[in-house]
Image (cartoon, rainbow, N blue to C red; front, side, top):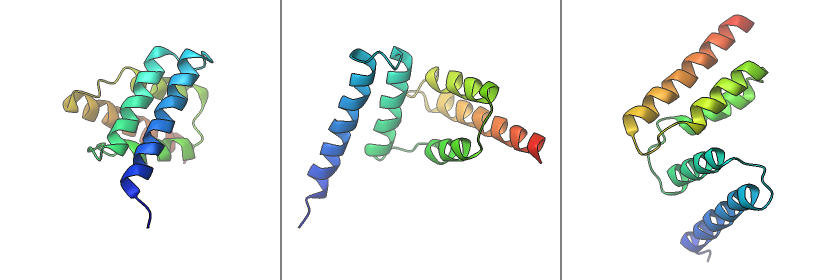
Length: 107
């Protein structure tokens, strides 16, 4: 029988180590990007309400955004205060509105 709690913890620990390695050793992620990814990981792995962020990020990635939209969404994400639910909700709404606007331009 699989111990899901220990498997989940291992996945969490491995992902944290990967994110830290990408920032500290490989210098691929900025400090802000690292904190953003760790915050999203916490939302997902700790079962917290992500306010639709994960599904929105999947939608964003699937929309093949242009560079300008990627830059705006990136800046919104890395500056998001994940400890403030109101701020988180507003930023997610901003990203959602940007995706809708971008989709309307393509249609």
